[in-house]
Length: 141
Image (tube, rainbow, N blue to C red; front, side, top):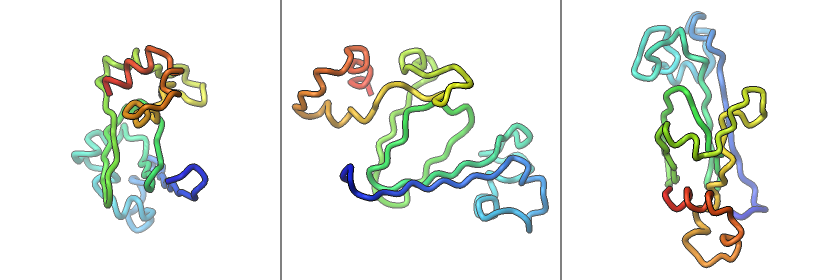
């Protein structure tokens, strides 16, 4: 997907309280994903009282999500195509440049740009301007 081509990223979310209301009042996200919305423990909602709600994100080809830290469980479903996911163990967080200030707009997101991964595979001269620490981490990824 070229930088000037249209692309879409759709997000839907529900508040944590929705699961406490009668099911016939649930939004389509809760109705269609009952394992995530149940007031009873499930594989995905093992502690329903602690769940913060549901966030569903749908992206198409070419959409990149910033590297970030999620405290809860996640599920990925690929309907068509392929995506590259870079997963890191918790002890790698200090090397990812994660913003830890709660009130910062990019709290829990990394300052690393994993969009460079494809550049590492070619002869792009811009790769030479990348900080050594960032390049070292991306080469491991």
